Each structure stands twice: as structure tokens, then as C-alpha cells.
Amino acid sequence: RLVSRLALVLHVSRSTMLSPQDVQEAISIIRDLPDAWSTLLPTIDSGRFFLLSRVSSVTERGQNLVAYRFAHPTLQRFLAAHELHRGWNEGANSPVSSVEELVCDDCWHDLLPHFAEHLKQPVALVFQEVSDK
Image 1 (spheres, rainbow, N blue to C red):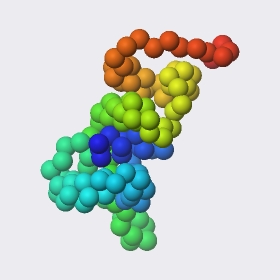
Image 2: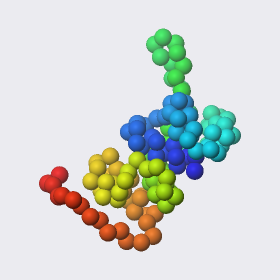
Image 3: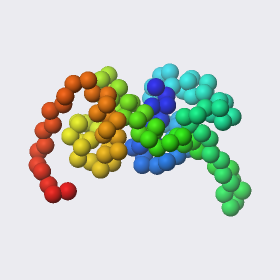
Image 4: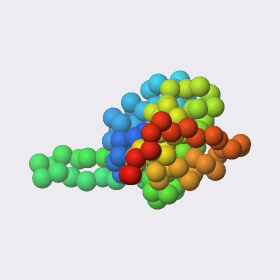
């Protein structure tokens, strides 16, 4: 659950990397995730966790920057779609309010095939207006 939550947050932010502050904000709203992150972090930092990796760089001023990224964008999108679907099933707060929004908003297009794989039944789509987009 931790990794899929981070994948969804990363997708919503439209970024390729999460700062340590991004991670803390993403996991703080779900009770067990901070403990899971604390347990997993040494494994990620040592390079022994293949889903997420730590990226370090030094600025021109000598400041160390740390970020985390997924091993591959397709993996990140699959996990984000899983978290989105799980949230809908549990009635959790979701960044998307309908399947129609997934179809119509360009931000979600790359998640749509992965999201569809999680659906157990056909979904009826209702569009309010159709445009040439």
C-alpha cells in the first residue's frame, strides 16, 4: 500500500521524483504508512529495493539533495492505478471523481489502461458534452 500510495502522489504531482518532504506528506494521512516507510527506507537507501531508488545530487552551493523515483514509469503508473482503484472501492478521498474524468482529462490517460484492468465489471460511461478534442 505504501508504494502504490507514493505512485499515485507522484502521478498527481506530474513529476518523476519525490522529495523526502513529498513522501512525508503522502504517507502522513494513512496511519500505518509512516511506520512502513521507516522500515523500508534503509533498504531503499542501500539500493536493495528494486521498485524505488534513492537519487542524490549536490547543488552548485554544495547542498545535498535527495529524491526517490520508481524503477520504471510503467510500473509507477500501474501502482498509481491500483491505488486509485483501491481508494474508490474503500470510499477514500480520490483525486478523480469519475471514470469519465479519467477518460476526458489528459493527466489520467496513461493510467486508464491499468485502471481498466482492475475493474471487475463493465462500466457505463456518461459524458455531459462531447468536444472535438
